[in-house]
Image (cartoon, rainbow, N blue to C red; front, side, top):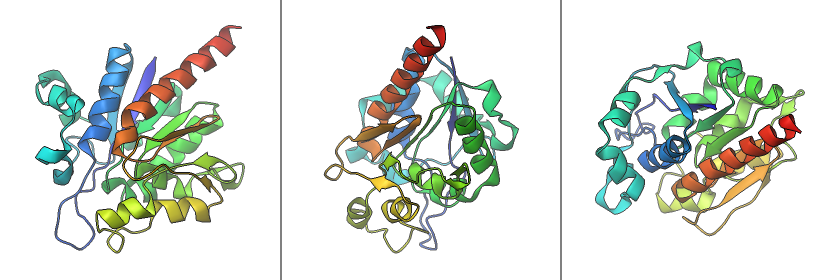
Length: 232
């Protein structure tokens, strides 16, 4: 099984002068869910090379077992430092794609034609796609059969109240919850910071960092169901 993980290359938090990037837990937890399942993983980003880690995600109060494991894993660190270029990736080479969040994707991946084309190619070829936290916002320009891909689908993502809690409502280019609703998605959410994942057919979305393990597990489950169906 081949899974592509797409990370942001964007490291500026709007015009605050602060750094951003991808949220470390949202990479580390799915990375080990996939690795422990024996999956072949490829990491990509718009610029290639080492993607920026959001420094806030690595604060002492945000540490998780997956992050601790990652920091001791020299092989994983090397793989992360050498992401391939997103523009070179083709949906036909993979079974699925997973997007970790963090605020970075809202600036680059949400507007990246390479990302839009890739997500549409996966979905159009009946392959599942999974996005967690801020990354469901990356679907804002992604279409399916001429309509927004999320239209009429059950979705989740980083909520307005979670964005308020981190005081970035006025900094981000758009609010994930509002954007998914605007596109016609049926937005659902759990209380702030609790794990919450929605599977609607081939679209898997997770609400926040706490949802990254469950989001990766849900994706593997969907893939195994597709395989059973294909063998039947």
